[in-house]
Amino acid sequence: MTSFQLQHLSYAYEDKLILRDIHFSIQEGERIGILGPSGSGKSTLLNIVAGLLPLKQGVVLDGEKEINDLPPEKREMAMMFQQPLLFPHLTILDNAAFALKMRKVAKKQQHEQAKEWLAAVGMEGMEKRYPHELSGGQQQRVALARALAAKPNLLLLDEPFSALDPELRLEMRDLVQDVQQKSNTTMIFVTHDRDEAFAIADRLVILIDGMVKQIDTPRQCYETPASPEVANFIGCKNIFYGMWEQDTFTSSSFVHTFQHANMGKVSGWLVLRPETISMTSRTTKHENAPLTAKVKNIQYRQGYYDYILDMNGTNLHSRQFTESAANVQMGDEVTVQFGTYHFIEDEKKGE
Image (cartoon, rainbow, N blue to C red):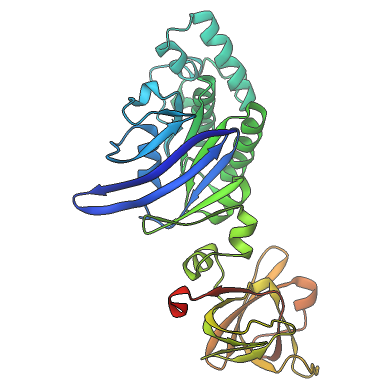
């Protein structure tokens, strides 16, 4: 069931176009992640949906109702910002109940609902404290309880975990998923953190230079990026422009034949995810792996190694689990094999 729709939204500031023809729908109970680099228009888009910025071109629909001209307080939305923005003179309980107070809910009911949500976010027993008595992570928990206590039709989050340390970010990420699933609250969150977006979102809206470049599940965005810009932003650095002719791909960096590719004759970008590139010591012979490279850099991660290989002056990024990478060292000559690949056709070339 469609909950919200954004139809052909564009926004300019001082004659500079910030957003260009944004168009997508949000299903009830869905978690939408707006992912993009800094300056791509993510927060601007969220502020337009919330009614904090005027919309002069496009339509925002709540169900079938247009809400372009509704002020923020009448949109039945709640928003979390990078900072908790709690009222310092109010207790935690009164902060969590604030939106209910503005709706003139009876005080007893305000406190009952606020206590329920404070308990849901792990703040039970702290109702009488004040914001200055809490850590940053605890303050964000209160801000989340305040947002959810209002029972919004749409919860908006503008990078609310960016000021927290890594461990607290993970805790808050899991908490938001947990309470969102229990309440079935429809949610849009903005982030430039790929890990965060992949962990939380049901679908991603990839926003680059104010334009939607792809809308899909996190897995599809990663495995089948719609453009080389998306592939690069998602984190795949092995992007090569070249020409297919049947099973053979030719680029300025290498020529390689893939089994059963049968691509015909077409130009575009070959995308090779680092985990699909395997390598072995050059002393081991592989008839189907004529490509060779030299190990240029090794970085250990949690359970795997990231390698940068020098292949004829071109960097090739490979990711290997610890066990399979144990015998490869800096400076080694290795044989490279390509596994699963993704191809993005150059549409302009085909015109």
